[in-house]
Length: 212
Image 1 (tube, rainbow, N blue to C red):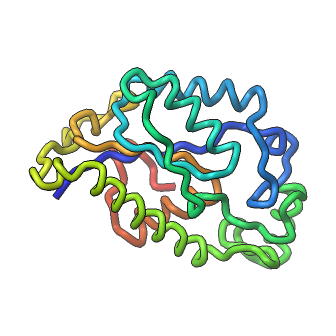
Image 2 (tube, helix red, strand yellow; image 1 turned 45 degrees about the vertical axis):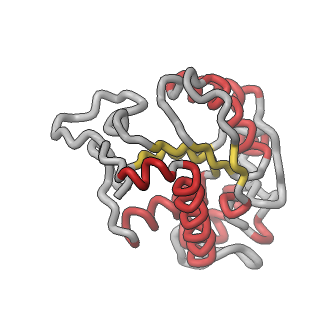
């Protein structure tokens, strides 16, 4: 089995984020000036991580973030970004373009917690999970195609299994893995993806992280 690392990053701030507006899929905003600074900071933090693959939502805010991170990387600044539409943000239907607080009130009125609430014409969590499954399948296939030599050789390098607390470094636990993918996407989508990975697939939570 080929061991691999996965680093997941949410896009930087947009003006809509700053104004408290819900973007979803209909509003394809670029990063704000602060969002660019956040992406530069993320790129600096991840500059020594040896990524072998980069996957990104094809929405502007995510692509800009990924481009900045990769540009700052010392070892893989020339990696191709694979834009995958299955990574785009969750659709919030009629709530898109409106205020986030208004959707929170809609969820409260419906007696549902915000993450589980689906506005009219929006995507349910289960529908988003279908896209997550599609993405994971495509990602694993791409990794297998790109790193066939490591797969055939049985790539035995594995993540650090030390019981010591992580030091807070960007490559904690994955410095020795032969394949390491960077995925840049969106907050609501990624929240559902993390729940799917840890709850449905029963993957262990990395040391030092609170599942919540």
